[in-house]
Image (cartoon, rainbow, N blue to C red; front, side, top):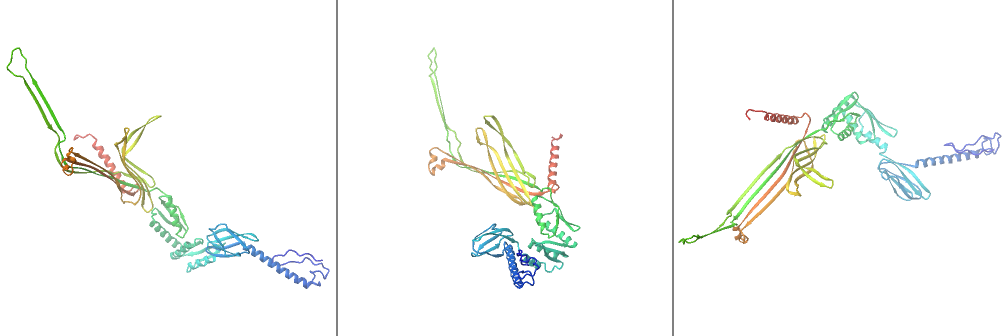
Length: 512
């Protein structure tokens, strides 16, 4: 009896079940059966077909994933391709070369899917793009570390790892170059104590050059520590990036400390120019007259020989100054205000020297009083960095009440304001100017009639010019100071002496 064939095994082909034991010629399992040679031939043919099918299945399983490195290309072959779709074109790019071939190009590391539409249906492939071919990376790294006898490279779990030990600063610099060129390579190379000490000194010097004067690198056993303070969180993040270039494992213990102090010395200088010019001839323009008449007559009982008397008087005179003018007057005035502000980096400081004007507002709810400030105002928002640069948002204003601008007995204000953002280093002076005011007036005085005659009329007229010019100049000098700096102590001493001097002046003195 012949048993049916079992399913093919992997690499063994079909197997026959147990022999019938009766040496039946028709039994394919009997070694003495009549058809034993033919049976062996069939068994060999079937085993080869089964092995080929296994290879096809294995190839089909491998073909569902396309692996390519960044910048590399691979051709995918499929019959009767009608269209294709890529999941993420930022990872891989696909182009159709023909109806049977697709060109897949790696764009950036990652994973995406490729869908192929054909006459036989739809097929989806996984596309994996690696940063660089591991073999190529290993060859490049081996070329860089050539000469480092105690350093070796090996591949573990698809990652490249450097192991060993370096005994000199030159070898450490070569190893740091590998870290910069190949960030994906894991560095597990240890440093000798001498190299660690030199690396700590080099890192401290580099931090000083970068402006981190409050940070120091120290070696405690096999570990390199960073200790100190930085002015801001941004400086702390920049320091962490800078430490990564050291090429060694560092314990970063740096904290954000007190903010830097900025002393801002300001001068408000207002330059005024007044001009009053007079040119021409001023004639009498006012004529006055005065008349008087007296009449007297006497009456009596007896005839008198005296006649009646009378008097008539009339006076005519002119009153007006006569002058020939040729006069030029120039005047210069200078007002100076010198405030000083001390502020922390990132904190705003304001100064006002002036006063407040009450302004009454009437509404249905009643009367409200609002106070409007005027005078010299200064607002500064300083920002410092570790290199000593100072960025300032500046608002400067000079204002004063002006009755000429009043409306309904509410005073108006003349205001000159400047708002800007500047950069400077400690000790530099910034000049803000151009806040300019110019008032000009002209008065012409003429003799009626004669003053309107061309050319000749110049003898009967005069002109007066009045010009007022003023310019506001603001000078700012920022300085980086600390609580115990010499400049701050000098300001405190000056204020103390001024207070003591004023106290002595108000005391009783017999020489008052």
